[in-house]
Length: 148
Image (cartoon, rainbow, N blue to C red; front, side):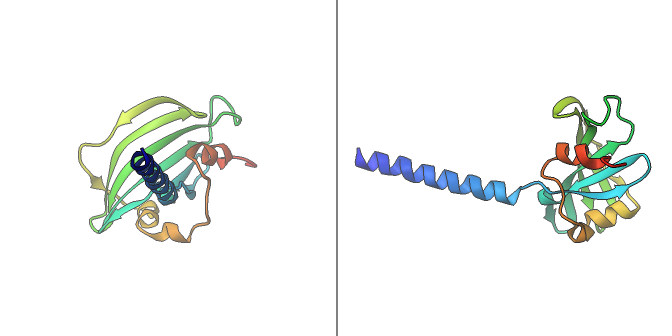
């Protein structure tokens, strides 16, 4: 009985510690990387995964025109993969939201395509110099057009 209780308790401690480390390692940090008159784009800097020149992350796009008004944001969260050396990008899939409710999804691209522009530079490393951002994509979307 004592051995069983000790084993259960040690599994609990290990599980709790691993969950804490997982949450700390993947804490979201949605940072604004681009703003135009029509759209705000954010990057989940806390969720970036890098292997050599390959970067995988999520981006949020928040259009200025929102059919439900500013109190319930409409936004898309897009998972993507970038090859920084080859300057290619591939959308892995996307989900659309009204507030916290998912209203749709789209599959990703079959193949990567050539990518140009400032977003690629930011995704490949410059995001580190941006100010810290929102904890969730919803929080980012909710504040994207506040005061505009």
